[in-house]
Length: 228
Image (tube, rainbow, N blue to C red; front, side):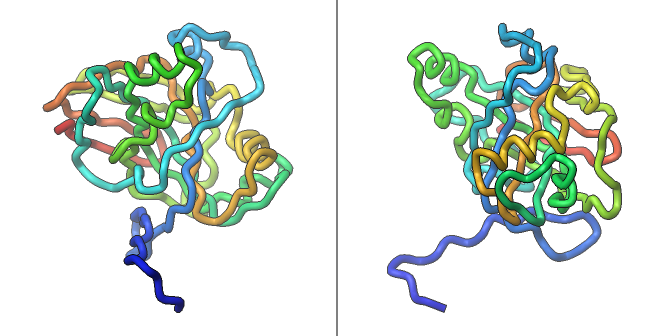
């Protein structure tokens, strides 16, 4: 192994349900406005438009019970999402072959600095400061597709302090799982270790320090974090 001029970073590893081995994260892609009701609540056209994507950093993902409220923001929102983890990749993947690339699934929260995002949108600037900040994407243990198959429907929900805030269903996705992979692979060459956050249903809203956020995807898993 080649020596490095500074210490090499440790890989980002996510837990996998039922085994000691971990899933190594390469890149993190996110699908924007993939549920019609969420597009409407954000003031956008809910019809089937070409999908758009943004990225988080690999080390924004973590398995933990706490979400540290970020600095320089006073309006941070939760967004519960189904997470796909890829075991294989490629470019221009046909939709009919896409699900064969999936290792497994999990539950994640795309925490968003909504105030910083609004500023970026207004000024025509990128979203990284709103999306790719430290600890912005807690994720549950992954569950292999070999165990649960590929979820096509099932409840997607999120509670804050025991009160239901988000309630949707995977079958409400505008772009379905195979289509997400196919469309994304037209823009990037996907690879093993890539993680895709597939969008959030309506009901997004703010959190404050001390809040307990619990969420889940039917047939996949659940996740609970406390805002600190």
